[in-house]
Image (cartoon, rainbow, N blue to C red; front, side, top):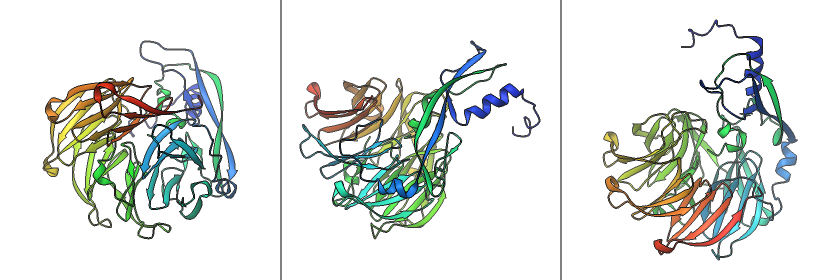
Length: 426
């Protein structure tokens, strides 16, 4: 295909539009049914700050409002909520009916979280930070693995981690450009501030580590950290000494990787083309156990050891048009079998607590009896504002939505009770 189009000449007006796309997002989409002459796009101009200054400002204001809720992590009585590309809110959840925000870690370019003991691991664009949170209000960076996330140096065509400088904000400006002929632009659902791309089964969490949501791109198993470092690679870090992580290896793990789910000594990787499975009982030498291929779509995955549950949704830069749940028999990992496909509106994160399966879907969190995976029974729908991810365990659910973080008590599924809500600043 590459050779076929190599010598096609494009009009200058088209070249200008394509160049603008590297730093902007299209407000609406031209389709084959509607060709427009003008197109409004949003340009993003980066605001840089010296990396040393950004790191010195790690301890932000504890009252910092949540701008865009992203990935979620829980450990002990604390909730760690990513504010996409801004940092991490630390919330004391000792009283689920009245959680208190105790700290905010200002980390430009942050989308992922993991915690071992008193060390929090966070991405800062291409770097991996090991942060001592013994006192959350006075966190300290203990060490940095530079350029660990090799695929995170550029966003929207702009360099965001330029060695001694980082992008800490973006100036947005709408502008209109003329389009002289048809060109199919992508929708803007997956622009800069939607980079953040269930729950781990409670038995996955040990006393020293916590529980991540199904959208996680970085997880812990015992003394190792596993992270998607760029679209096709998995990086493995030795955290035996939690404060001084050391990279063990990185390897090609599958195409278009998006999420990681840990189960016992195995990893289940969700990608835009399928699910990849690895045995990491020897972390320095991961062994491929097989894969399950599906049509192109965004793809978080969880498992209970017998079945894998994979939600597929269209858009968000993944391509495809599938919006469904795939239930896969993984009792024989080298010969996985699709059990059944269930239609949804736009499913994203998911979690499982015993026989209860929770799926975030467009306007609600849907709760199913999954005792028979080939015959899921809908038990309840919890109305939600574009739910993104969920951690459900011990009759409590944390749900990340477009407008904030909800916490529910589902001990009585007929009367699910809202315990608390943290609103975004929008």
